[in-house]
Image (cartoon, rainbow, N blue to C red; front, side, top):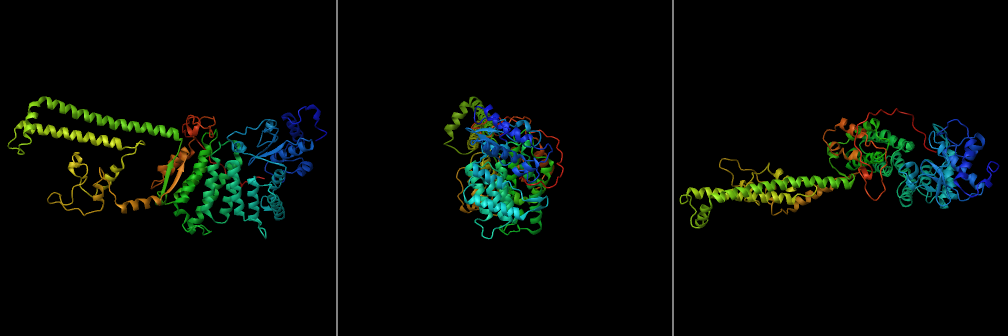
Length: 604
C-alpha cells in the first residue's frame, strides 16, 4: 500500500481523492468473481491469502490502509448493512460496494439525510479505534457451512465481545450488544455477567437514546430470543415495534436484507406461531395465561406490524407488499374470532392535517345541509304565518281577546277554529325549527351524529314514542308513560332503559350503574393507532364478522404511489399528500408471487 500511494501528489493530508485512490488500490487486487454472502471474507487474512473481501471487509481494509499512511482522522462508519468512511469535519466517502453494479459509487459522498434504511438517515455508528475492533469481532462468522457452526469460534467471539463490553468499548454499539446477547443465549457462560434478555433490552435503549430509535436489528434480536423461548405474545409485540421503526424510512432496492428479514417474520415465523397455538391454545412458555388467538392485544400487535410495513412502503418508488405477503396475513387474521377482533378499537391517524381539513369540510357540508334545512323550515313557517296573519288579521285579534274568556268549541266561530289551526301550525314550525337548530348546535365538528339520537333509536324497540315529543311540544318526555297506552293494548314490561331515556333531551340521566357498565366496556377495549393508508383503510374489513379476503388482498397489494419522489418524513411542515410528501393515488397493479428461496444466510 505504501509503495502504491504517492502522498506528495495530494497536498491536502486527507482528501476525498486520496481516499478513493486507496480504495481503488484495494479494489484492484480483488478477484473479479462474484462471491456475495460467503462467510469469512471480512478479514485482512482473507484479502492477503485469497484476494477476497466482502463489503465490510473492503471498508475495514481502507481504514487500516489510511492508518498505515498516517491518515488518523479517517473513521469507519457503519449502518446495519453497509459501511463507509468519515473524515475531516464529518465529510463522508463511499469506499466499497453494496449489491451488484455499484462500483462507481466509490469516492462519492454519502447522503446521510437519505430516507433509506441502508444509511440510517444520519444515525449511523461512527467508530472509534476500539469500536472498530468491536465491529471486527462482531462481524466474525462461526459458520462452517450452511448447516453447521463452529462452537469453538462462537465461544471465542463471545469472550472477546465480553472483554470489549466490560471495557465500555461497545457502550454505543447496539448491534454488537445484541450479537453478544445472541451468543450468550446460544452458548451460555458458566457465570454470565448479564442474561441475554438484559443485553437485548440494553441494545434497544442505546438505539433509542443515542440513535433516535432508528435501528431495527436490536428489536429483531430481542424478538428472536422471545420466539425461540416460546414467548409468542412478547415476540409479536417486539416485531411490531421493529416495523414501527422501519416505517421511518422509504423502501429501496438496497434494503434487501431487512426486507428478507421481515418477509421471513411475516410468512414463516408468525404463521408457525399461529399453528402452534391453534393446537395447544396458550403459548409454550406459559408466560401469558390467555390463549394467543383469544387475546385482542395480539391482534392489535399484528395490525401494528403490518401498519409499519405499509408505512415503510408509502412514498417509496418500489412497493413492498405483494400477494405473497397478503395471503399469510389474511390466513392469520382469519384465526382470530370476530368477537376478539371486535374488541380492538382501531384509530386511524393518516396525515392529520389533511384528515382534519377533509373532516372539517365534511362537517361543514353536513352543518350547511342541516342549517339550510332549518332555514328553509323556518322560512316556510314564517311565510305561512305571515300569509295567514294577513288573511285573518282581524280574526286573530278577536280570538286573542276571546281566548281568555272561553275554552269551549261551541262558543267559537269557524274563524276561531281556523285561527287556532294557524297558531298550532306556527307553534309546530317554531318547535321543529328550534329542534333542528339544537341538533345542528349539538353536532360535533367531526360530523358524527348526536349520541342521543343513537340512544333514542336503541330505546324505541322497548317503548312507545310520545306524539307530543314528535311534534316538538314536549321535548323532555320522549316516551309515553307505561299506564297511558291505548285501551286494548298489552302493557309493555317495565324496563330500566325507559326512565333513563326520558331525559335524552333536556335533563340527562345520572344512573351510576350504566356509567359503570359503560366504563367497564371501555376498559375491555384494546386501542391501536394505525398511520398507514393501506391498513387504516382496512379498518371495517378487519372488524367485519366475515372477512372479505379478496378485498383485503386487493387493498394490501394495491400500489400506494405512482410518483417516485420521496416524501419528507422528518420535515416540520406537511406538504401535499401522504405523510408530508407528494399526493398519491391507489392504483391496483399486477403482482407476482415471490418464488420461495432457501433460508437466507444471516448477514455477517
